[in-house]
Image (cartoon, rainbow, N blue to C red; front, side, top):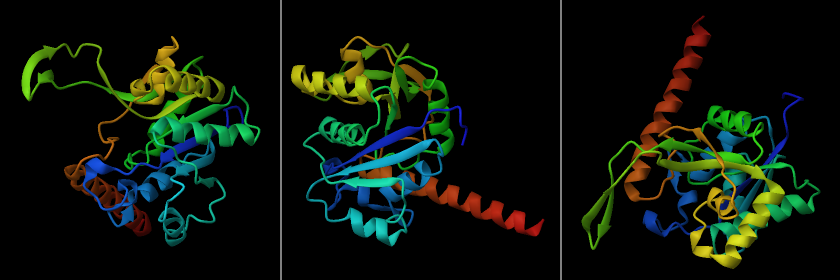
Length: 253
């Protein structure tokens, strides 16, 4: 670990039901490439040495997470904390995670990452890039990719407008902001316009701040719909095979 770089804590809101995925259980617990999605996510994030602690915020009624962490040898991982205080929305769950770190004495100027449990294709390299860029910024920022496709608006299933894609980005996670500012921004948004909070960056924008955009990767998509699972499975299997091939090549040398 670079002793000159800041230590960072991470919040994973993991209390959603995942209704759009068509799954019987929350989508973050669905099996993709032989492991629950949240396990792939955690294993990637744990490879980032700068992350000091991971607060996994689950529903108070969660029946899955403890068994999953035990089965996949993560229950004794000292950096993972499970918080059974997930709220009715993403913002409420993230705030519960922020309060957890604040109560543990983590200062308001400390950096916090927030990542979607359902972005299980995140790589340590992307997280490290985000940390490197945001650590030097006064506001913080997020991974995102420039919009490449033509953007349409619709009314009742028919195109009503082709919108300009200039300067348009697709937001991803992790997103990285300071604990105090993010806490205040989320509380403000919940009081004034809760429907506007689609991610952490949108809450900061609402108080007049302009988060930094760091180009991510198209593979870091959020698994949402049934067909997303097939693509994620293919990509994760491909990564596993590359690692296996690399290890076998190393043994032959």
